[in-house]
Amino acid sequence: MSMMLEVPDGVQQALRVPEPERQVRLLVELACALYQREILSFGKAAELAQLSQSRFSRALADRGIPRHYSGADVVEDLAYAGRL
Image (cartoon, rainbow, N blue to C red; front, top):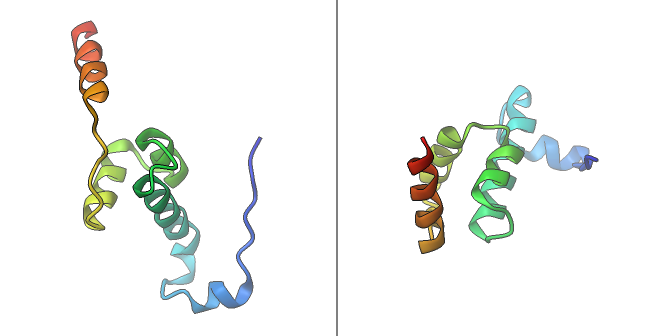
């Protein structure tokens, strides 16, 4: 199931972004904001932004948004690395 989000014409026209980039930029900005507020996980926010995790990490850094990286994340990453 997917969700459609309507952006009024007036808002779209007010965006200071070239028209061909608007949808992509809105998705990235929304994903970054939801990640920053801890509403979405890193992986799901990257998925929403339609970016690889490395590109989404760069998008966060460009906006000065720190990664949320807990002790549980470290343990999970180490366990995953041990399976490689």
